[in-house]
Length: 189
Length: 278
Image (cartoon, rainbow over all chains, first blue to last red; front, side, top):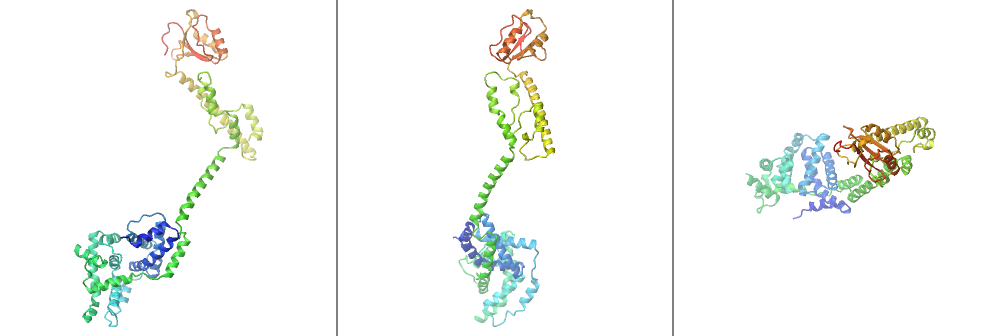
Protein backbone atom coordinates (compact mmCIF):
# COMPACT_ATOMS: atom_id res chain seq x y z
CA UNK A 1 0.00 0.00 0.00
CA UNK A 2 1.43 3.35 -0.98
CA UNK A 3 0.92 6.01 1.62
CA UNK A 4 0.31 9.50 0.24
CA UNK A 5 3.32 10.73 2.19
CA UNK A 6 5.64 8.62 0.01
CA UNK A 7 4.29 10.23 -3.13
CA UNK A 8 4.52 13.72 -1.67
CA UNK A 9 8.11 13.19 -0.62
CA UNK A 10 9.00 11.89 -4.08
CA UNK A 11 7.46 14.94 -5.70
CA UNK A 12 9.32 17.26 -3.37
CA UNK A 13 12.57 15.45 -4.06
CA UNK A 14 11.98 15.66 -7.80
CA UNK A 15 11.65 19.43 -7.67
CA UNK A 16 9.97 21.53 -10.29
CA UNK A 17 6.39 22.70 -10.28
CA UNK A 18 5.06 19.60 -8.51
CA UNK A 19 7.15 20.42 -5.47
CA UNK A 20 4.90 23.34 -4.56
CA UNK A 21 1.80 21.14 -4.68
CA UNK A 22 3.40 18.37 -2.66
CA UNK A 23 4.64 20.79 -0.02
CA UNK A 24 1.15 22.20 0.26
CA UNK A 25 -0.41 18.76 0.66
CA UNK A 26 2.12 17.74 3.25
CA UNK A 27 1.70 20.98 5.15
CA UNK A 28 -2.08 20.66 5.27
CA UNK A 29 -1.74 17.13 6.51
CA UNK A 30 0.95 17.63 9.11
CA UNK A 31 1.04 21.26 10.23
CA UNK A 32 -1.54 20.87 12.96
CA UNK A 33 0.10 17.68 14.19
CA UNK A 34 3.49 19.32 14.29
CA UNK A 35 2.17 22.32 16.18
CA UNK A 36 0.44 20.06 18.69
CA UNK A 37 3.60 18.02 19.06
CA UNK A 38 5.77 21.06 19.72
CA UNK A 39 3.29 22.41 22.22
CA UNK A 40 3.17 19.09 23.99
CA UNK A 41 6.96 19.19 24.08
CA UNK A 42 6.67 22.49 25.92
CA UNK A 43 6.82 25.17 23.24
CA UNK A 44 4.52 28.15 23.36
CA UNK A 45 1.94 28.43 20.56
CA UNK A 46 4.06 31.06 18.80
CA UNK A 47 7.21 28.97 19.07
CA UNK A 48 5.30 25.91 17.96
CA UNK A 49 4.25 27.78 14.83
CA UNK A 50 7.85 28.74 14.10
CA UNK A 51 9.06 25.24 14.76
CA UNK A 52 6.41 23.92 12.41
CA UNK A 53 7.59 26.21 9.60
CA UNK A 54 11.23 25.37 10.29
CA UNK A 55 10.43 21.67 10.17
CA UNK A 56 8.97 21.90 6.68
CA UNK A 57 11.91 23.95 5.43
CA UNK A 58 14.27 21.41 6.94
CA UNK A 59 12.35 18.59 5.32
CA UNK A 60 12.42 20.18 1.86
CA UNK A 61 16.12 20.99 2.22
CA UNK A 62 16.93 17.40 3.16
CA UNK A 63 15.03 16.02 0.19
CA UNK A 64 16.65 18.57 -2.09
CA UNK A 65 20.05 17.26 -1.00
CA UNK A 66 19.01 13.77 -2.07
CA UNK A 67 18.16 12.16 1.27
CA UNK A 68 16.73 8.69 0.74
CA UNK A 69 13.56 7.97 2.69
CA UNK A 70 12.45 4.44 3.37
CA UNK A 71 9.65 4.97 5.89
CA UNK A 72 7.97 8.23 4.98
CA UNK A 73 5.83 8.80 8.07
CA UNK A 74 8.54 7.88 10.52
CA UNK A 75 11.02 10.05 8.65
CA UNK A 76 8.67 13.04 8.63
CA UNK A 77 8.29 12.81 12.36
CA UNK A 78 12.00 12.33 12.86
CA UNK A 79 12.53 15.64 11.04
CA UNK A 80 10.12 17.39 13.40
CA UNK A 81 11.79 15.75 16.36
CA UNK A 82 15.25 16.86 15.19
CA UNK A 83 13.90 20.38 14.77
CA UNK A 84 12.61 20.37 18.30
CA UNK A 85 15.86 19.00 19.75
CA UNK A 86 17.93 21.59 17.87
CA UNK A 87 15.67 24.40 19.00
CA UNK A 88 15.77 23.27 22.61
CA UNK A 89 19.58 23.02 22.52
CA UNK A 90 20.01 26.38 20.84
CA UNK A 91 17.68 29.12 21.90
CA UNK A 92 16.48 27.50 25.07
CA UNK A 93 12.85 26.82 25.59
CA UNK A 94 10.49 29.60 26.42
CA UNK A 95 7.88 27.13 27.45
CA UNK A 96 4.77 27.55 29.42
CA UNK A 97 4.74 26.22 32.90
CA UNK A 98 3.04 22.89 32.64
CA UNK A 99 1.75 23.13 36.19
CA UNK A 100 0.05 26.46 35.46
CA UNK A 101 -1.49 25.06 32.32
CA UNK A 102 -2.69 22.00 34.16
CA UNK A 103 -4.24 24.20 36.86
CA UNK A 104 -5.95 26.31 34.19
CA UNK A 105 -7.27 23.21 32.49
CA UNK A 106 -8.55 21.72 35.70
CA UNK A 107 -10.65 24.79 36.36
CA UNK A 108 -13.08 23.41 33.79
CA UNK A 109 -15.71 21.19 35.31
CA UNK A 110 -15.76 18.03 33.27
CA UNK A 111 -19.11 17.19 34.73
CA UNK A 112 -20.68 20.27 33.23
CA UNK A 113 -23.95 18.95 31.90
CA UNK A 114 -23.86 21.29 28.93
CA UNK A 115 -20.90 19.39 27.51
CA UNK A 116 -21.18 16.52 25.08
CA UNK A 117 -19.25 13.28 25.65
CA UNK A 118 -16.77 14.13 22.90
CA UNK A 119 -16.17 17.56 24.39
CA UNK A 120 -15.52 15.98 27.77
CA UNK A 121 -13.05 13.50 26.33
CA UNK A 122 -11.29 16.24 24.36
CA UNK A 123 -10.91 18.41 27.40
CA UNK A 124 -9.75 15.55 29.54
CA UNK A 125 -7.24 14.47 26.93
CA UNK A 126 -5.93 18.05 26.83
CA UNK A 127 -5.48 17.89 30.59
CA UNK A 128 -3.72 14.58 30.31
CA UNK A 129 -1.58 15.96 27.47
CA UNK A 130 -0.53 18.88 29.63
CA UNK A 131 0.49 16.62 32.45
CA UNK A 132 1.99 13.83 30.32
CA UNK A 133 2.94 15.33 26.97
CA UNK A 134 5.13 12.44 25.88
CA UNK A 135 2.43 9.90 26.64
CA UNK A 136 -0.12 11.99 24.73
CA UNK A 137 2.19 12.22 21.74
CA UNK A 138 2.76 8.47 21.85
CA UNK A 139 -0.98 7.87 21.77
CA UNK A 140 -1.32 10.23 18.81
CA UNK A 141 1.41 8.42 16.97
CA UNK A 142 -0.26 5.12 17.71
CA UNK A 143 -3.73 6.17 16.67
CA UNK A 144 -3.30 8.81 13.97
CA UNK A 145 0.02 7.76 12.42
CA UNK A 146 -0.68 4.09 13.07
CA UNK A 147 2.84 3.53 14.35
CA UNK A 148 3.64 0.25 16.08
CA UNK A 149 5.34 0.04 19.47
CA UNK A 150 8.85 -0.37 17.97
CA UNK A 151 8.30 2.63 15.69
CA UNK A 152 7.12 4.76 18.59
CA UNK A 153 10.12 3.49 20.54
CA UNK A 154 12.46 4.80 17.86
CA UNK A 155 10.99 8.27 18.11
CA UNK A 156 11.04 8.18 21.89
CA UNK A 157 14.51 6.70 22.08
CA UNK A 158 13.34 3.63 23.97
CA UNK A 159 13.60 -0.08 23.37
CA UNK A 160 10.45 -1.86 22.14
CA UNK A 161 10.02 -3.49 25.54
CA UNK A 162 10.40 -0.22 27.43
CA UNK A 163 8.05 1.44 24.96
CA UNK A 164 5.35 -1.18 25.58
CA UNK A 165 5.74 -0.63 29.31
CA UNK A 166 5.52 3.11 28.79
CA UNK A 167 2.43 2.80 26.58
CA UNK A 168 0.77 0.52 29.11
CA UNK A 169 1.22 3.15 31.80
CA UNK A 170 0.00 5.84 29.42
CA UNK A 171 -3.16 3.89 28.74
CA UNK A 172 -3.76 3.48 32.46
CA UNK A 173 -3.29 7.20 33.10
CA UNK A 174 -5.38 8.44 30.22
CA UNK A 175 -8.19 6.14 31.24
CA UNK A 176 -8.01 7.70 34.68
CA UNK A 177 -8.42 11.14 33.15
CA UNK A 178 -11.31 9.96 30.98
CA UNK A 179 -13.11 8.29 33.88
CA UNK A 180 -14.94 11.53 34.68
CA UNK A 181 -16.65 11.31 31.31
CA UNK A 182 -18.18 7.99 32.27
CA UNK A 183 -21.27 9.82 33.57
CA UNK A 184 -22.38 10.58 30.00
CA UNK A 185 -22.24 6.93 29.20
CA UNK A 186 -24.15 6.03 32.37
CA UNK A 187 -26.79 8.62 31.63
CA UNK A 188 -27.24 7.43 28.09
CA UNK A 189 -27.61 3.79 29.09
CA UNK B 1 1.32 -7.69 28.62
CA UNK B 2 3.11 -7.15 25.34
CA UNK B 3 0.34 -8.85 23.41
CA UNK B 4 -2.25 -6.88 25.34
CA UNK B 5 -0.72 -3.47 24.61
CA UNK B 6 0.07 -4.40 21.00
CA UNK B 7 -3.54 -5.42 20.53
CA UNK B 8 -4.70 -2.15 22.06
CA UNK B 9 -2.37 -0.23 19.72
CA UNK B 10 -3.79 -2.17 16.78
CA UNK B 11 -7.29 -1.21 17.89
CA UNK B 12 -6.29 2.44 18.25
CA UNK B 13 -4.78 2.38 14.75
CA UNK B 14 -7.73 0.50 13.27
CA UNK B 15 -5.56 -2.47 12.30
CA UNK B 16 -7.30 -4.97 14.59
CA UNK B 17 -10.07 -7.21 13.33
CA UNK B 18 -12.23 -6.18 16.27
CA UNK B 19 -12.86 -2.56 17.10
CA UNK B 20 -12.37 -0.86 20.43
CA UNK B 21 -14.63 -2.36 23.02
CA UNK B 22 -14.67 0.41 25.57
CA UNK B 23 -16.81 3.43 24.60
CA UNK B 24 -14.34 5.79 26.24
CA UNK B 25 -11.54 4.40 24.09
CA UNK B 26 -13.70 5.04 21.03
CA UNK B 27 -14.23 8.59 22.19
CA UNK B 28 -10.50 8.89 22.82
CA UNK B 29 -9.70 7.87 19.22
CA UNK B 30 -12.20 10.44 17.98
CA UNK B 31 -10.53 13.10 20.12
CA UNK B 32 -7.08 12.12 18.90
CA UNK B 33 -8.10 12.33 15.25
CA UNK B 34 -9.93 15.59 15.81
CA UNK B 35 -6.81 17.07 17.32
CA UNK B 36 -4.70 16.02 14.36
CA UNK B 37 -7.23 16.82 11.69
CA UNK B 38 -5.84 18.76 8.73
CA UNK B 39 -6.61 22.44 8.93
CA UNK B 40 -7.10 25.01 6.24
CA UNK B 41 -4.16 27.01 7.49
CA UNK B 42 -3.68 29.05 4.33
CA UNK B 43 -1.85 31.82 6.10
CA UNK B 44 0.81 29.47 7.41
CA UNK B 45 1.07 27.73 4.06
CA UNK B 46 1.56 31.00 2.18
CA UNK B 47 4.22 31.93 4.68
CA UNK B 48 5.96 28.62 4.12
CA UNK B 49 5.87 29.10 0.34
CA UNK B 50 7.37 32.57 0.63
CA UNK B 51 10.11 31.29 2.87
CA UNK B 52 10.97 28.36 0.61
CA UNK B 53 11.04 30.72 -2.33
CA UNK B 54 13.32 33.12 -0.50
CA UNK B 55 15.71 30.29 0.26
CA UNK B 56 15.61 29.05 -3.32
CA UNK B 57 13.98 25.78 -2.35
CA UNK B 58 10.69 26.15 -4.19
CA UNK B 59 11.02 24.50 -7.63
CA UNK B 60 14.75 24.56 -6.97
CA UNK B 61 15.94 21.09 -7.76
CA UNK B 62 16.82 21.61 -11.45
CA UNK B 63 18.51 24.95 -10.96
CA UNK B 64 20.48 23.79 -7.97
CA UNK B 65 21.79 20.72 -9.75
CA UNK B 66 22.68 22.25 -13.07
CA UNK B 67 24.30 25.55 -12.37
CA UNK B 68 27.09 24.37 -10.05
CA UNK B 69 28.20 21.75 -12.59
CA UNK B 70 28.61 24.33 -15.35
CA UNK B 71 30.06 26.83 -12.95
CA UNK B 72 32.61 24.27 -11.82
CA UNK B 73 33.65 23.48 -15.40
CA UNK B 74 33.91 27.13 -16.34
CA UNK B 75 35.86 27.97 -13.19
CA UNK B 76 38.27 25.09 -13.78
CA UNK B 77 38.93 26.23 -17.34
CA UNK B 78 39.55 29.81 -16.25
CA UNK B 79 41.94 28.72 -13.52
CA UNK B 80 43.82 26.44 -15.90
CA UNK B 81 44.20 29.16 -18.55
CA UNK B 82 45.27 31.75 -15.99
CA UNK B 83 47.82 29.47 -14.40
CA UNK B 84 49.18 28.40 -17.77
CA UNK B 85 49.61 32.02 -18.83
CA UNK B 86 51.23 33.32 -15.68
CA UNK B 87 53.44 30.33 -14.96
CA UNK B 88 55.12 30.45 -18.41
CA UNK B 89 56.84 33.86 -18.54
CA UNK B 90 57.38 35.60 -21.84
CA UNK B 91 61.17 35.36 -21.60
CA UNK B 92 61.02 31.63 -21.07
CA UNK B 93 58.85 31.35 -24.15
CA UNK B 94 61.41 33.25 -26.27
CA UNK B 95 64.34 31.32 -24.94
CA UNK B 96 62.48 28.09 -25.31
CA UNK B 97 62.25 28.81 -29.02
CA UNK B 98 66.07 29.07 -29.24
CA UNK B 99 66.87 26.21 -26.92
CA UNK B 100 67.01 22.70 -28.32
CA UNK B 101 64.48 20.65 -26.56
CA UNK B 102 64.90 17.24 -25.07
CA UNK B 103 63.70 15.40 -28.14
CA UNK B 104 66.10 17.11 -30.55
CA UNK B 105 68.97 16.58 -28.15
CA UNK B 106 68.16 12.93 -27.87
CA UNK B 107 68.08 12.74 -31.64
CA UNK B 108 71.52 14.29 -31.88
CA UNK B 109 72.91 11.99 -29.25
CA UNK B 110 71.59 8.94 -31.02
CA UNK B 111 72.84 10.21 -34.33
CA UNK B 112 75.79 7.96 -35.13
CA UNK B 113 78.31 7.82 -32.37
CA UNK B 114 78.02 5.94 -29.09
CA UNK B 115 76.90 7.76 -26.01
CA UNK B 116 79.79 9.63 -24.45
CA UNK B 117 80.04 10.92 -20.91
CA UNK B 118 79.00 14.44 -21.98
CA UNK B 119 75.87 13.04 -23.60
CA UNK B 120 74.79 11.58 -20.32
CA UNK B 121 74.51 15.01 -18.71
CA UNK B 122 70.99 15.74 -17.47
CA UNK B 123 68.57 17.17 -19.97
CA UNK B 124 67.46 20.75 -19.36
CA UNK B 125 64.00 21.26 -17.96
CA UNK B 126 61.71 22.65 -20.62
CA UNK B 127 60.43 25.58 -18.59
CA UNK B 128 63.85 26.47 -17.19
CA UNK B 129 65.88 29.31 -18.62
CA UNK B 130 68.53 28.61 -21.26
CA UNK B 131 71.93 27.18 -20.32
CA UNK B 132 74.32 29.58 -18.64
CA UNK B 133 75.24 32.44 -20.92
CA UNK B 134 78.87 33.52 -21.12
CA UNK B 135 80.02 36.17 -18.72
CA UNK B 136 79.81 38.86 -21.40
CA UNK B 137 76.24 38.03 -22.15
CA UNK B 138 75.34 38.14 -18.49
CA UNK B 139 76.97 41.52 -18.12
CA UNK B 140 75.29 42.80 -21.24
CA UNK B 141 71.94 41.60 -20.08
CA UNK B 142 72.40 43.57 -16.88
CA UNK B 143 72.82 46.71 -18.94
CA UNK B 144 70.15 46.10 -21.52
CA UNK B 145 66.56 46.16 -20.30
CA UNK B 146 65.47 44.54 -23.57
CA UNK B 147 66.40 41.15 -22.23
CA UNK B 148 64.49 41.72 -18.99
CA UNK B 149 61.73 39.33 -18.02
CA UNK B 150 58.13 39.89 -19.03
CA UNK B 151 57.37 42.16 -16.07
CA UNK B 152 56.74 45.59 -17.56
CA UNK B 153 59.05 48.50 -16.58
CA UNK B 154 60.97 46.91 -13.71
CA UNK B 155 62.70 49.17 -11.27
CA UNK B 156 66.49 49.37 -11.16
CA UNK B 157 66.62 47.30 -7.99
CA UNK B 158 64.29 44.70 -9.42
CA UNK B 159 66.37 44.54 -12.60
CA UNK B 160 69.57 44.07 -10.59
CA UNK B 161 67.95 41.38 -8.51
CA UNK B 162 66.73 39.61 -11.62
CA UNK B 163 70.21 39.75 -13.20
CA UNK B 164 71.77 38.44 -10.02
CA UNK B 165 69.26 35.64 -10.02
CA UNK B 166 70.10 34.80 -13.63
CA UNK B 167 73.83 34.75 -12.88
CA UNK B 168 73.28 32.69 -9.78
CA UNK B 169 71.18 30.27 -11.76
CA UNK B 170 73.88 30.05 -14.46
CA UNK B 171 76.52 29.20 -11.89
CA UNK B 172 74.33 26.59 -10.33
CA UNK B 173 73.55 25.12 -13.73
CA UNK B 174 77.24 24.89 -14.63
CA UNK B 175 77.98 23.25 -11.30
CA UNK B 176 75.18 20.77 -11.88
CA UNK B 177 76.56 19.92 -15.31
CA UNK B 178 80.09 19.44 -13.95
CA UNK B 179 78.69 17.22 -11.26
CA UNK B 180 76.74 15.25 -13.84
CA UNK B 181 79.81 14.76 -16.02
CA UNK B 182 81.84 13.53 -13.06
CA UNK B 183 79.04 11.23 -12.05
CA UNK B 184 78.69 9.98 -15.59
CA UNK B 185 82.41 9.24 -15.85
CA UNK B 186 82.29 7.34 -12.64
CA UNK B 187 79.33 5.40 -13.92
CA UNK B 188 81.15 4.59 -17.11
CA UNK B 189 84.01 3.20 -15.10
CA UNK B 190 81.87 1.17 -12.85
CA UNK B 191 81.70 -2.60 -12.99
CA UNK B 192 78.36 -2.37 -14.81
CA UNK B 193 79.71 -0.23 -17.66
CA UNK B 194 80.25 -1.87 -21.04
CA UNK B 195 83.90 -2.88 -21.33
CA UNK B 196 85.47 -1.41 -24.48
CA UNK B 197 87.53 -3.64 -26.80
CA UNK B 198 91.14 -4.28 -25.83
CA UNK B 199 94.15 -3.44 -27.96
CA UNK B 200 97.52 -4.72 -26.78
CA UNK B 201 100.50 -2.43 -26.80
CA UNK B 202 103.77 -3.82 -28.21
CA UNK B 203 106.33 -5.28 -25.83
CA UNK B 204 108.87 -2.63 -26.64
CA UNK B 205 106.49 0.18 -25.70
CA UNK B 206 108.01 0.26 -22.25
CA UNK B 207 106.29 0.36 -18.91
CA UNK B 208 105.56 4.03 -18.58
CA UNK B 209 101.82 4.33 -19.27
CA UNK B 210 101.75 7.72 -17.60
CA UNK B 211 103.88 9.21 -20.37
CA UNK B 212 101.70 7.61 -23.01
CA UNK B 213 98.56 8.92 -21.29
CA UNK B 214 100.02 12.42 -21.20
CA UNK B 215 100.92 12.22 -24.85
CA UNK B 216 97.49 11.01 -25.88
CA UNK B 217 95.62 13.58 -23.79
CA UNK B 218 97.55 16.28 -25.60
CA UNK B 219 95.87 15.24 -28.84
CA UNK B 220 92.73 17.06 -29.90
CA UNK B 221 89.61 14.91 -29.59
CA UNK B 222 91.41 12.15 -27.67
CA UNK B 223 91.05 11.39 -24.02
CA UNK B 224 93.00 8.80 -22.01
CA UNK B 225 92.48 7.72 -18.40
CA UNK B 226 94.12 5.02 -16.33
CA UNK B 227 92.26 1.70 -16.33
CA UNK B 228 91.23 0.13 -14.12
CA UNK B 229 91.45 3.08 -11.70
CA UNK B 230 92.53 0.82 -8.81
CA UNK B 231 95.60 -0.65 -10.55
CA UNK B 232 96.33 1.66 -13.42
CA UNK B 233 97.97 -1.00 -15.62
CA UNK B 234 96.01 -0.02 -18.70
CA UNK B 235 94.58 3.03 -20.44
CA UNK B 236 91.04 3.67 -21.50
CA UNK B 237 91.27 5.84 -24.57
CA UNK B 238 88.37 7.47 -26.38
CA UNK B 239 88.31 9.52 -29.56
CA UNK B 240 85.64 11.85 -30.83
CA UNK B 241 85.85 11.60 -34.63
CA UNK B 242 87.81 10.17 -37.57
CA UNK B 243 90.44 12.88 -37.43
CA UNK B 244 91.00 12.26 -33.76
CA UNK B 245 91.23 8.53 -34.50
CA UNK B 246 93.92 9.20 -37.11
CA UNK B 247 95.85 11.38 -34.66
CA UNK B 248 95.52 8.69 -32.01
CA UNK B 249 96.81 5.94 -34.35
CA UNK B 250 99.74 8.12 -35.29
CA UNK B 251 100.61 8.74 -31.67
CA UNK B 252 100.41 5.12 -30.54
CA UNK B 253 103.62 3.10 -30.39
CA UNK B 254 104.24 1.14 -33.59
CA UNK B 255 103.06 -2.44 -33.31
CA UNK B 256 99.97 -1.57 -31.27
CA UNK B 257 97.02 -3.77 -32.19
CA UNK B 258 94.49 -2.15 -34.55
CA UNK B 259 91.80 0.11 -33.07
CA UNK B 260 88.09 -0.39 -33.75
CA UNK B 261 87.10 1.01 -37.13
CA UNK B 262 84.41 3.41 -35.84
CA UNK B 263 84.95 7.14 -36.33
CA UNK B 264 84.36 7.67 -32.64
CA UNK B 265 84.77 5.10 -29.91
CA UNK B 266 87.00 3.88 -27.19
CA UNK B 267 89.51 1.16 -26.55
CA UNK B 268 91.46 -0.32 -23.65
CA UNK B 269 95.18 -0.22 -24.23
CA UNK B 270 96.99 -2.88 -22.24
CA UNK B 271 100.48 -4.17 -21.97
CA UNK B 272 100.88 -7.82 -22.92
CA UNK B 273 100.57 -10.15 -19.91
CA UNK B 274 99.08 -7.58 -17.57
CA UNK B 275 96.05 -9.75 -16.81
CA UNK B 276 92.42 -9.87 -17.80
CA UNK B 277 90.32 -6.80 -17.97
CA UNK B 278 87.45 -6.43 -15.62
